[in-house]
Amino acid sequence: MPVRPGPAWCGADRPLHSPATSRTPTVSIPILRRLHEAEPGLIEPLSALLIDAVHGGASVGFLAPLTADKAQQYWAGVMAAIGPALVLWVAEHGEQVVGTAQLSLCTKDNGRHRAELQKLLVLSTHRGHGLARRLVAAVEDFAVQHALSLLVLDTLAGSRAEGLYMHLGWHRVGEIPDYAGDPEGRLCATVVFCKRLSVRLSSVALQGC
Ligand SMILES: CC(C)(COP(=O)(O)OP(=O)(O)OC[C@H]1O[C@@H](n2cnc3c(N)ncnc32)[C@H](O)[C@@H]1OP(=O)(O)O)[C@@H](O)C(=O)NCCC(=O)NCCS
Image (cartoon, rainbow, N blue to C red):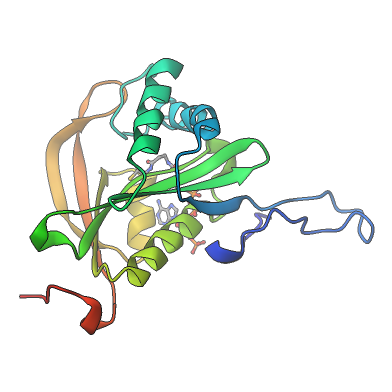
């Protein structure tokens, strides 16, 4: 029976079953948190997570085989970019980073109401337990709090992620053929999604046309 974690803001790494009161093995929930500044110590576990995804067939910007050097270079760049235009979440289970998501905020004058969800990754051993749902909820929660009324993303057509975003209420805008290569370099269609969020109108600089 998969463990269903609680909401993103209460993801404590607490045992679900106390060994003192139960013979059931201890199961813990990954801690989910937003990084407020670069944490170089996370570059290595984040790289392991990225390599796991790419080598598992995820189309997230890289070809297989993805070397540790290249993955670490990528995450060092992400760490350096953390700030008003890039928000990074990690889900940790002990020393491992088992999930992550990024939100890239549009900095154009006419697009400050929107942001792009990127690099939603869950370690293959931790999938199917609601971690992506928690990460997406954390991203959407952040967006609402920051008056972002439109989120967009793209993902590989026919992937598990496509089904997941539809399941989570995102609008499937359409498909672009041959948009990007999969990790083996085969050109594949990409699906574009968007989600409009209810934010306080007074806090949105731009109103819908
Ligand atoms: C896609 C991915 C992030 C999903 O992570 P996960 O932790 O296994 O997903 P969850 O367990 O949180 O699933 C969330 C919900 O989506 C549902 N879901 C998952 N895949 C689905 C599918 N193909 N069709 C319909 N619903 C689906 C789950 O049943 C769950 O619903 P519930 O909470 O109502 O029970 C993970 O498979 C992954 O990292 N893939 C490789 C990287 C990738 O492709 N990322 C997307 C890049 S944009």
